[in-house]
Image (cartoon, rainbow, N blue to C red):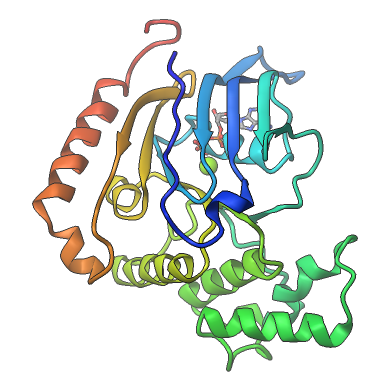
Length: 280
Ligand code: ADP
Ligand code: MG
């Protein structure tokens, strides 16, 4: 079992934010009336340092969403400790923005009112005008300033994803949890949204824990890629990535470095694909 830590990138506010996430020997067992206890993830030791971008990549069912739900405080670990800013997570973690696997936009609310939703939760004591300004600013950041009055059904898939991103950023959380946010989109749109996300983070550094099943996406975005195996979900490999992302993402994607890392991660996933329970 190894402890995984990431060195923070230099950037405004990273150290002072202190918004790191820690998983200490975390396991999650699901128990239901119909079936035997099922170990979804086992003995996860992982530290996401403040201001770093960590991606988790692994096959379907290896516990990626379960891990994010625990960081968000929506699920409790069966054993071990999940920490945020150094303290155990004991309830819903309101300091994080969570972009879930489904965009969960409310169809009866306009785009602007969907983005406003987190500001309506208890604890956001701001005036109506302030909230409106925050919503407008966020929509502008994702390039949707002209679409606030539309309903979700009137948007394309990529626009819906951008609304969901704006909603998870609207109260300026120190940390972003993202669960396969661009999964269902075509390759071109995905690339464009990846670029937009990196651009947003360049201006305003946050701690990011990003889940994907796409190895190339994991490598393109992260300071560190954590590869999960399934049955039970566990860490099988950790890869530090030092890509120059200041220029064109398309060019960076074609670099031999990316090909080499992706090849290595592919073989890691293949090696651990069919490992039966307990055979490690
Ligand atoms: P991933 O996001 O990597 O696809 P999940 O975290 O959604 O995986 O699920 C991991 C495993 O735990 C899966 O086998 C899933 O069926 C199981 N699981 C997830 N949530 C529950 C639950 N509430 N009850 C029982 N089993 C669950
Ligand atoms: Mg999932």
